[in-house]
Length: 290
Image (cartoon, rainbow, N blue to C red; front, side, top):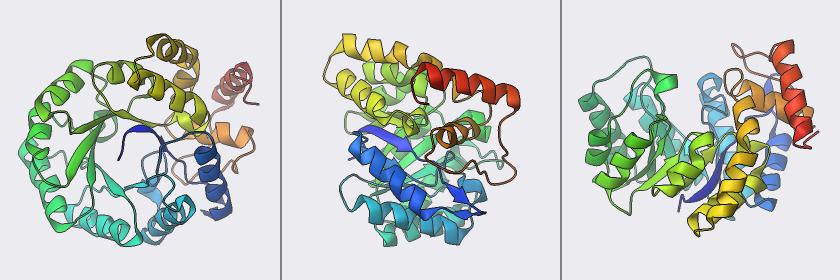
């Protein structure tokens, strides 16, 4: 269900509020350009600064706009287990197809704590769960042995892996079996992860070029090595510039330059520096995006 090219979609704002019209337009843009699924309320969606009401609104808008055409994998993670349960139950009630749960941040739980956290959330909900491991944002790395333990939990069906280690990804794929969906959480490593058995990507850069990422994933999964390789190298500079500052600052600035959203962020995030914006402009022009 969660295979292919998924977009970690931004949350557009206008005058401090969620811009519902812009979000709907973005989702339609993705559906028209081959994106296989929408991931609202992730890190790229500025979930950490959304109120619970806004969180629910963004998921509801995503579900209503997709109308079953492509799945919605809703971000529902938290550093508090009870809050993660509540957010996941809300997404389940709204009609999301799955939930993406980040490892608890700031708390720095042990591996046993991580196992208990996700096991408890899974037990209290019925929705399919994708784990999310991104040590650069959370300061904790969920190890392959912990993922393997969690893969035996009935409704934990995969992991978004953003450790940056192909060895770790390989160990997860090897230990969790073919039915467990290992998904790239690192845009520049999408092709390598697919090459060693990954099932797809949840991408930041796909916000800008959904057609390119859909083609890359499709080529990699059908064995068209030359096409996948060509797209991997074609996207290198764009993937790189998307992380010139903290995500999602560059991607939102890029979408604003492309005229798709307002150039608005939720504090404490702010617009990019003039130097970063200049570099971003150059790269977007090189890719004929502006």
